Image 1 (cartoon, one colour):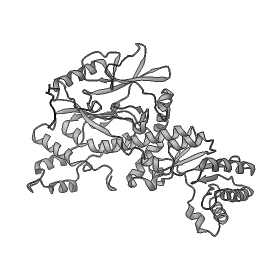
Image 2 (tube, one colour; image 1 turned 45 degrees about the vertical axis):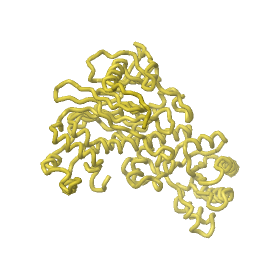
Image 3 (cartoon, rainbow, N blue to C red; image 1 turned 180 degrees about the horizontal axis):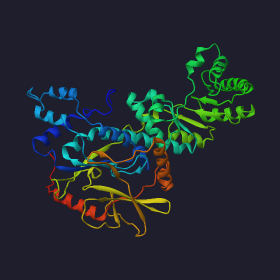
Image 4 (cartoon, rainbow, N blue to C red; image 1 turned 60 degrees about the vertical axis):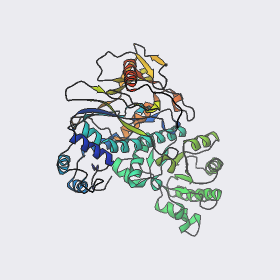
Length: 491
C-alpha cells in the first residue's frame, strides 16, 4: 500500500477495471451478485488454516475511493488502436463510486478449511468485481502467515516464539503484515518496532554479532551491553567460540547480580543447537543461574523445532524469522474469488458455477454460509449451505472430494454459523476486536479441534461437506453445463 493512502482503488489488476467498464457499458453495473473468497488446498500440508487479514480488508473497503490523480492516470491509458481505453463518462462514474455492498466474513483467528468462504460479498456486480484483487492480496497473505505461525507455535509446545523476520520479509508492507499475522497465529512478540507501535504487539530484541565484533574482546562486549542494558541482557554467544561465549556471559552475569540485576540469558544462533543448548543449560545451572533463558534462532521452522525438541534441546525461547514471514515452504495460499449467483434487483437468484477438468477447481453455487457443529467442547464437522435457498436444510453433508461419502449430523448437535455481518449497504456493522483478543480466539479455536488435525505430518482430515440439497443443486448445474463429446484420437 502507498504511504499516503491506506487503500488505493488502483491497487488492482487491469482486468478488474476493464470488466467493470464492460459491465457499465452493458448496463449490468447494478446487477446484484454474490462472490466468495475461498482457498482450495491446506497450506504446508496442514490439517487446518487460520483466517487472518479481515481488519485490513475492512479498512480497504471503508477507504475505497478513486482520487483525482487516479482518474488522471486512467484517462491516459490507451487501447490497441492508441485510443483511450476508458471513456470519460465511465471515469466520471468512478469518481463518485463508493462501496455499498453487504459483506460477511469469518472473524480473524477462526480455524477454516478448503472451499469454505472466508469472506462473502453481496451487492452491485461492478463493485464486487473491483475489490477482488486487493481482498485476495490481503487475506491470502495474512492467512498464510497466521497458519505458519500457529504451526510453529504448536511445535514449540508452549515455549514462547518470537518473530524475527523483518529483514527477510517481502518488503516493508509485507514485513508489517507478517508481524501482525504471526502474532495472531501465536507468536509472543516481534522484533519489528513499527509493528509494535501500530498494532500493540510486544517487541523483543537482543544484539547482533556486530556488537561483539566492535569491541576488542567478547567479554568486553558483553560487559558494555550489560552496562547499557542491565535489565535486558541476553548475550549472543556464538560470534567466536560458543562454549567460551557462554562462560563469558556467565562471568558478566555474576557482575550483574552483584549490582542487583537479574541476568536474562543467552542466544544461540548457529551450530548444533541441541547439543549447545544442553551444554549451556548445564553451565548456567552450575553457575547458579537456573532461571536464565536460552534463546535459539537460525532458520528455524516447525519441523526443525520439533526435531530439536525430540533431541532433548534445552531451549526456552524460539526466534523464528525467514521461514515464518516468507512462508518459506509455500509462498502463496492460492485463494480464489468466485461468483456464486446473480439476479436483477429484487428478482430470483440465478445460480452460477465454474467448471473445470480438475474437480478441485469446480466452484460451489449459491450464497454460501458455513455451519460448524460441536459435541461437548469439540468441533466435529462443518456444513456449507446456501442461505438463498428456499428449502429446509438437511442434516446430511456430502464430502467435497468424494460425493459417495456422506455423513449425518446428529439432531441434537449444536451448530454455529461462521460468517458474520461486517458491512450492510456499505456501512460497517462489525466491532473489530483488539489484536490480543484475536490471538486468543485463534488459540481457543485450535483447542476445540481433535488433536489429529494438528499433526505436522499426515494430519487427520476434518469433515467438511456440502449440505445435501446444495450438493444436489451443484450436481444439476454441472449436468446442465456439460455436453456429450465424441472421443477421438488427438491429431
